[in-house]
Image (cartoon, rainbow, N blue to C red; front, side, top):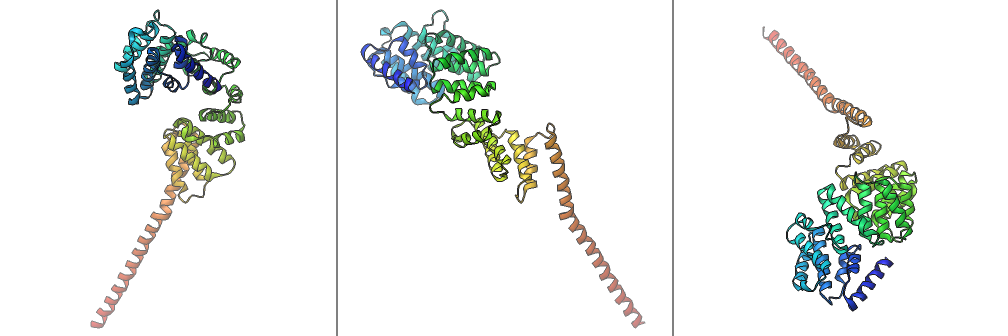
Length: 386
């Protein structure tokens, strides 16, 4: 946080005197809150206007919020492009094509031999976004290539670390060895919370739980995603009490739905181990609300109902176990469902068919008794008349 404030104040004061340089522009484009930092610049020249246009164009493609698109075209109209350095002209052309035409067209403009540091920074963001949206591995590789070229000159640039750590922890082409080497380099540089959060997410994906907790301790103010990752790491390392404390201090609503679902599921498991079935049921239901495809939460919820005092516990247990779709793949689910179905049939026999049969038999006996009495009276009447 302190580094970010210092960067903003430095660039802000420097821009007032001389305008934004390419190096300053790259630092801003690659910062965590880049649109805020760029928007806060004084509009003292064409480079500032161009950078604001670039920033608003990029954030429009990332968020698809129309106000950013409007601002992009507003700044673009005010820029006298003939006064811009070539680096700014080229980068602005790429972003204009991105906003006005398409991502593919803007990427086609990127020339590896022509790119400067500023256009490389712009290219990193565009290629990374395209990779996330289309899952095109070529975009991921190109984003990584540009990030590697820039990181030695901009060793504290947050977004370069995000790209490299993400690629080497999420992509099948990534390297755990590269991730670990870059992590060591970043730790030596005393990274801020944003870079640490990126490292921690990668460690979560790679299963580096001990390292994750070490890096979590370095954070000044952990974000909610990092809290979730730290709690999960504690669970994997058997430290359930610590995990429970962290999760209960995490704003679940701020987590991605998939993470929130896992977090609630883990709280449910902890509650079950503590013997609190009602709390476990509550957490499992929340897990399913956040991710309707969380099959493990469905299984655990179904089994938890069996141990509860719920009036309809057998019906609810059968419902969630069947909904999980895991009967063919999980022996416990299969055996439990067999038991519940046999119980259902037995209950139907005892509670519905049994009483019905009894009523029918009683009715038949009553009819036979009634007809026997009637026949007997008729016979007696016939005897008297004869």
